[in-house]
Length: 113
Image (cartoon, rainbow, N blue to C red; front, top):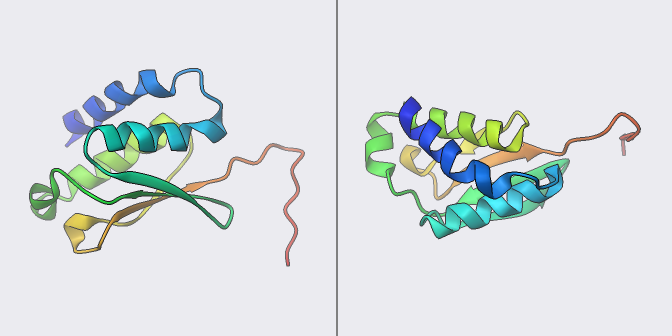
């Protein structure tokens, strides 16, 4: 699982190098799509949701969820932010969903509704 996560990270690091933090999720979704994951991003509250509509290892990951954990950790390192996996195809969900929180700078203020 760790080797697969490291491979994923190595493959996509070049794609994301030099991009601004706000441009990385869309570029990552494009790279994942090129590799067969059919990935999309959408705005969700104070962040983005990365959805992978296909998983090439879903049957193996169903038995070894460490694959999903390693992939999630790699995504977080690639995006340089703590991400949270909300759903996985291998667990029986319709898509693999990862929440990517918005990175707020120190001058940004968030007010309650």
